[in-house]
Length: 268
Image 1 (cartoon, rainbow, N blue to C red):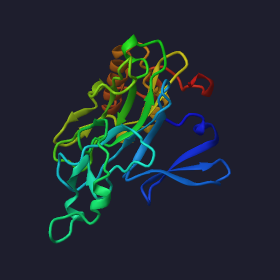
Image 2: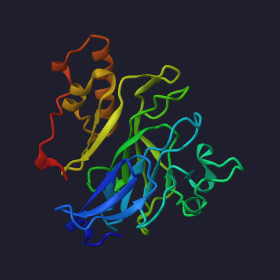
Image 3: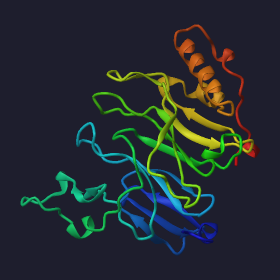
């Protein structure tokens, strides 16, 4: 928990050193908060507990099903594996082993934290937001949404969707699984062929959920649509059908669903 600290410190990712750093707004008092994170993209504080959660893209070149991306609560001074281990202290990266088969850094491997939620490897998880609105059913309250940009280096494509991560309403901790919320962008996994690649997520003051997408050179169109999910699957189908017809040349940007761009004052 970071009670009070987030008000006076900024959190940043040092991509070269793979650490999260706390520092003063003026850059002073820099301290390492946690380390061993390969590529942390989404960072958010839980609205009730104030715990810091992140989404992390894991390493490549270990096969189609390794290593899972993940979502997890960050422990201060915790080590999360990169580049010596992954998922737990029992799994070491073969590229960082000595000739006798042991890890180059057994001291760090022994400290490796196990993430809360594992995603399919190469899903390329990006942004993440906790849902604090009231427009969706109550089960979504204080749970998290994450955007899967989709794979580029897997024999069969995976990702390309928005997922929901349920939290226990008593403990305010992840229940242990995730579920598809917006999907169908991946039309041919062996291609992979898609008509959308989710990137960013916003929760609006009216409780609607917006996501952006940069697939198939449709960045501008996606930003204009924002795919408002206040009406659930209806809005998703509407935007999905428009994207399909736009790609086929049957519709123009002027024909897009008129959800409009969000105003800064609308964003929670």
